[in-house]
Length: 334
Image (cartoon, rainbow, N blue to C red; front, side, top):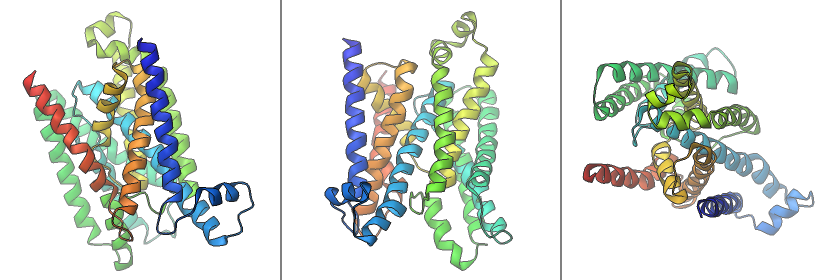
């Protein structure tokens, strides 16, 4: 019965992924019918404008939303497992804000001396900021006893990093302020195929490594003493939790800015869909669920008030925040 439910759930996620990806490709300020998209894929499309929009704008943006959405959901799942807290996530704990701070520093000050900044440098900068914020969170985890205080501390770290980022943006050139402002609010626009290639290599490598850790993670979920008795190296596993969750959060922040609530909401939605919390199922399911969630929200962000585009964080918050409230209410009743 559980196996049938898992197969059905994966089928649902796969269908939703294809559907949202197709809708993101064909819907926009310039509508490209599906028949024209297929002709362009076959190399027969005669409309140069449609071909350019498809290959240079919509396809890389769609691919980025799928890859980064999956990364963010997976990062949230790791943090919830690591801290044993249902509302832990890269945005709530301030990890995304830490990554945003270092990337903003790079964009404002290094951009004046260098003509262009590579994707690898962007990710390295975001990773350093994410690790720095994660370090503060871990220090707080040693000091405070209640997980609720840890979340409050993470939120405060996020506010501090965001405030410093806003101060830094004021020193940017006038021509860069608009781009920096849009990026700091979260957006998948401006993604190139080079960006997609870099993020895909890092995200899929991290996701594969996390999947290989399914058994140790499963033991860790049952308690640290149980995991230790099962032969799990807890120190190494904790290091993996920190590095992998920070790397995944850094990838999305470097290219799309901070995106809220995906890392919290998606793992819980997926858990409800599958009716289980087994890591061997949750890891790929969270990735697929995050991809679907971000593709859907990005579609709304682009089209709801077209030609004006909303930030992706605005849309994800509209759908994600109520889920967090429901989680807190259920925990309070329990």
